[in-house]
Image (cartoon, rainbow, N blue to C red; front, side):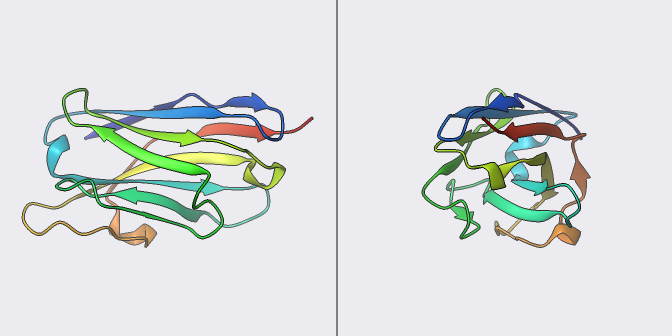
Length: 126
């Protein structure tokens, strides 16, 4: 599967953005999808994940209540709605996919994701 992330840009503190990640190659409805991010000079970190079955979600503490992950299994796309953005949200955001042929889970570890998008830059600054 190939992942194409988009929607990044420059936004002022308190503003909003919506990131999209389009998947191609088939089987999207059996992929757990996630967003990770890497800030300048820091390691990549988990942001949010959504299961392929019930739409169960899980968030990093730093973004819970401000960022919302969702998916459209018809459009083969996962979204990250980002509200009340802060300067510390500045990072390159990556979408990732974990193929799960049977039992759905929502992992937060990078190594469990097999496919990665190219990343989209989000800059929060006044």
